Image (tube, rainbow, N blue to C red; front, side, top):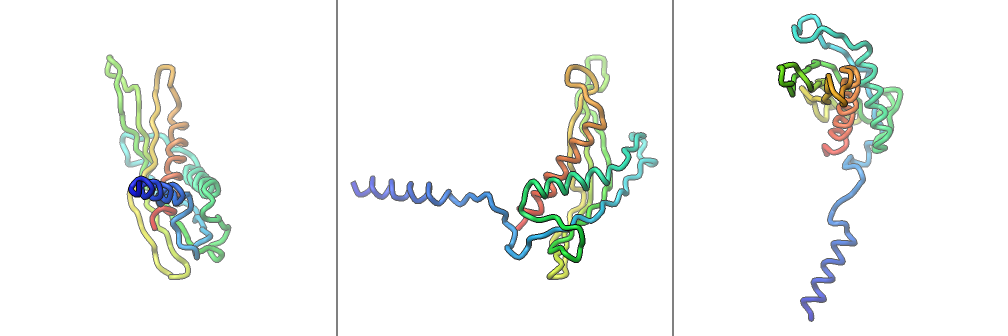
Amino acid sequence: MKRLFLSFLILGCLVVSGCGYTAHSALPPRLKTIYVDHFVNNIDFTTQAHRTVYFPLLEVKARDALIKRYQFDGSLKVVDSPEDADLILKVTLKRYERDALRYTDSNDVQEFRVNVIVDMSLYDTAKKEYMWEKNGFAGEATFFRTGPKAASEESAVQDAVVDLARRIVEKTIENW
């Protein structure tokens, strides 16, 4: 009887405590604001033989998606000035890749994967040091060229930018 009581007591404690899971940020309490610097677009479309299309304002769209994702997450308030920020995030677009994933019976490409690849760093303004730097960080999406799931490459790039924003926010919030 004592074992049964003890088992229920332990089970009750685990249920009440939530087993250590929390929906709160793992950020230190002193970090409340972030400034997302303007993205730099260093993608060189002229030297990549497999890539001939330029996506206008990709750096602006990527920054806007990232700001929206921070606002959605709510762990950090996005500020308009680096002077008002606890953290400064700098992002440079480095590469755009499009790779074939699936082929038709006639050897035509049916599905592609696109990657938007960035280098980024997070600067702590109070400590005056970089918290982390990450090179080759990617957001990805896939798209079909034909069939009922056909989509444009531009819409896949937008999906990759949204995925990149989600991953950057997760890296920022959960890295602690």
